[in-house]
Length: 220
Ligand SMILES: *Cc1c(COP(=O)(O)O)cnc(C)c1O
Figure 1 (spheres, rainbow, N blue to C red):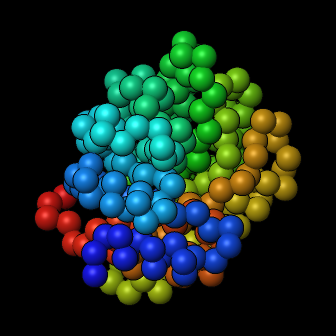
Figure 2: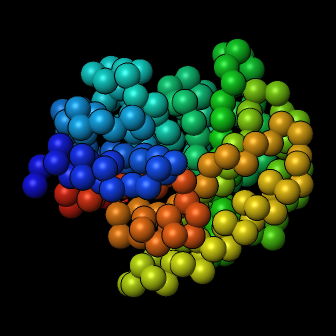
């Protein structure tokens, strides 16, 4: 099956209210365009340089979500290019996003990345620190918290991700119930090719899918 058919099938199978982020790392602009022809509305990129390479050939006919690790020196361009940042994981980066967004007079929606497996080598906020983190940055004027995102640990059986998805869903509810000003808990981004069905069962309304649309990656 080709990219077009794969994307069509997934789009038609997703329950109403669940949005597809097409994870496009390592893919060419032509491959991404084929997914867009099938109806894909959101492209996710992990690396600024890759996004800059394909963006001129695609433009703003889709929304661009940043889903990778954020380096401070790249924030200015990430804020310029992307519509949503899904991977906010530190105060330092939050303040840098605010600074750059203010300079660009741009409002930028962000999801907080939760390190739901509490893995020391991974980025993201530990579950128990989430409320505190939101309270520290909620009153920024150009950065707007709109939800949570998680990857979960690397596991053999995607079913083993369920507890991490559930934990992140519970955090999502906890933050939402606090009704913190300027915080709109609207998006819960969880699940990839192997795990998106489980993630949806656990409350995800954004799923990030690459391999199932484009086929196996050749590198990275
Ligand atoms: C690569 C990637 C995905 C998609 O992974 P697949 O297994 O190819 O579907 C989703 N989210 C993030 C953050 C990624 O880096």
